Length: 335
Image (cartoon, rainbow, N blue to C red):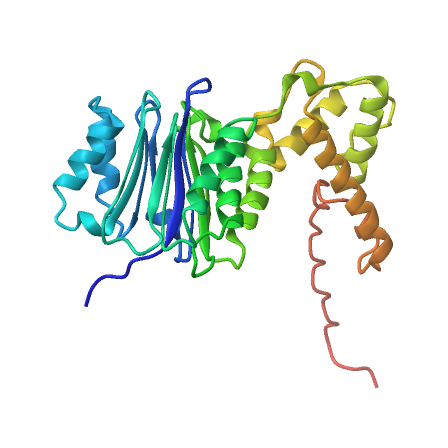
């Protein structure tokens, strides 16, 4: 029995200015992010699909690492593969040169578009308009690589996408020390493995990922911690149980500690500031959580006295020691 082939459309791309390489992909295939996208910082990115040869991933990156161009990698990988007519491949190298390959036996419609710093490829598509639309969207969309890759995916779907439908999507972008706490280069790594509208879900999850784990906001939008802003912070932190003290509008030690604890407990370590400013996304998130907590208190009847006034940031109450058992009387019953 022949191995299954699956329809997919993807884009591999490089942002020369920011030093980023990435892949975005959607398919009527479960967990496409586990198969198609490969990327390495200062090396390049690769998408292997159709009758995907997952060996293309590590082998292609190894060749790119040795300095081979995207075109040379595509030629080397496919020429040595006896099943190349069933494969599809897109590659962008360290310099942003791109190349792609569509085997003669890939299921219609199948093809690719190569542009400056990117390649779009797809198979079992509604038509050529899918990859053409992806290319136009990538070139026309302002902003950084995440925005442009997501725009390309959405454009491909609007043009018909995988003609069998939608199931999974993924976004992988690498940049130097872009990972959590600068521990690796995996700047964006999101997979939607099974969803009726995976591209929309990918964008929704990316917004959350961006809010907590990335630092993409324009420094010009930083909010100075004025008296009014600090007073609002103190109010919201108090509602959430972080107890910064009286809403005085002064950025005192208690307020700084309360804010630092809020940031740490809500995974905003990368957005902490020491220059008396804060990111608007963090301010908005804190305000929203405080409003939600206030609404919760008006809807919920307290099961424990004082429970609704504590907030999620409050320390748990001290543990009460159980009372010792009461001793019974000695001796018999008096008559």
